[in-house]
Image (cartoon, rainbow, N blue to C red; front, side, top):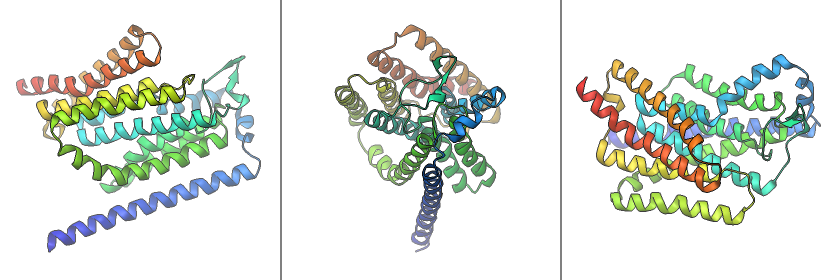
Amino acid sequence: MNEETKMNEETQVDINLILKILILAAITFIVGLVLLLSGLNIWFNEFFYDSSITYTIFSLISELGDTLIYILLIVVVWYTYDKKLGKNLAFSLFGSYLINSVIKDIFQDPRPYTNIRDSEPVEEGFGFPSGHSQQAVATWGYLAYEAYQKKNKILFWIFTILVYVIASSRVIIGVHDVQDVWGGLTFGFLWLIFFILLEPKISPKVASLSWIVKIVLSVIIPIALFVILILIFPTSTVDYGMITGAMMGLALGYVFETEKIKYEPRNLTNMQRIINVVIGLVITLILYLGLSRLFPESQIMDFLQYLILSFILVGLVPWIFVKINRKS
């Protein structure tokens, strides 16, 4: 009876968290809608356009929403804290990337004219919805959710504020208008809620499958997504190869690691964590920069590049750590 009561209390906490996220999403949606209806869609872009200092500062802030930063963030979480959280963070990120890319290709909304500086576009691709804004919710927002669950209010507020700072930076540097950021945050919150609700139901079912079935699913699903999206959007500039390749590498690497390596960062000493994260970050940067030079840019090459990158980081690097940690 005590166990049942405990489970009910945990479920209630989860429901309360979801409700709070929904309220935050609703407030964000309403504020964005008011700004749009007030005719301020491009006002902030124009207000900050001529300020080089502001542009420099917020360009640096905007980099916190860059793909490489997220990869490094996932690596740090995975290698030093909790590989399940790292896995969830990675799939939340790339799931959001996939949804954002499809929506961009559907709407094909051009970026605002403030995206042009020195006669050249700052960012390529379509504007709505803002990818940086949506991915900020999927990653920093997910970390805020986890921090709230752990009752760490300081980290919760840091991660929550980061979401809005990154989103605002995209307008301030002129690469997106209010509508783009509003859409990115809205879709980001919807995805975050969906992922939080769905992940605890899907993960145990996947874990109960045989390793062969897991491998088959890890290969078939990303390839099917890649082929379908390329057929639907044959002229797309969106990097579907990167997204689906990373998803396959993550899935295959996670199956291999959990079945054969069984790396457990929670059992490490502080010194082992420091050694592992330094080695992990160096390997990540070398692979990321090296593979980008080795593979020419194309959808298929990007698929292979990120398949290799994510598989090595998730499946093989933990094997190195296990060997090193046994000797230390």
